[in-house]
Image (tube, rainbow, N blue to C red):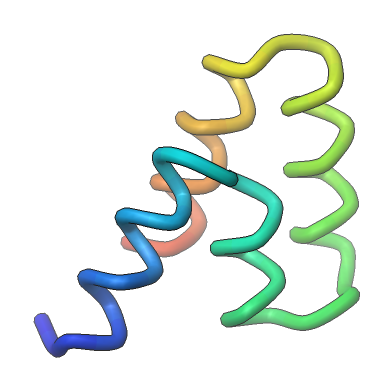
Length: 54
């Protein structure tokens, strides 16, 4: 686990779409995370952590 991964995980906790965006760009993963974050902050965090650690 490198420094970049740690930063992405920290961002995924505070701003889930931003953490996913930094790794994947404006792809489907980002949009799913954005919608989940808008619908509820916790689902956005969980999805971001899952997608960044898989």
